[in-house]
Image (cartoon, rainbow, N blue to C red; front, side, top):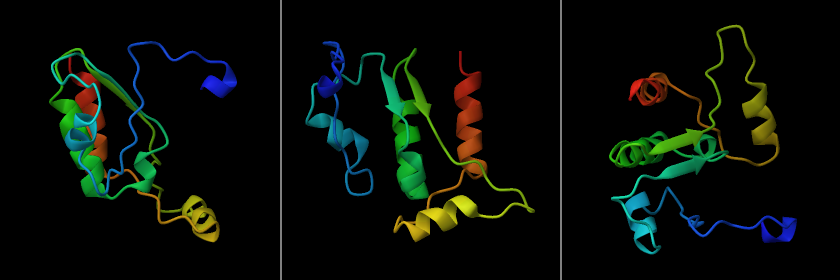
Length: 117
């Protein structure tokens, strides 16, 4: 961000975490994160590269944060029965591991998050 001339606000901290090897709790323990404070989690472009269990662990962590905490995330929608898997094929051709597609459980978590006051 600094290279782009964008100042990072003092209440923002970037924390690098390998979600497959380290829990979010353990990763944030190395930072100044306060689990009692309302938190905004920006999880853009991450979920498609993780296993379902890693995704579930992050959603469980965020769901336990105090209100009015929020998460914003991106995901790849499930393909319809007549759709090709072009995205997965292109990712595989580029050497990427399979991208996780949103399943019933991920949609349920997103629905719960939208319905929470």
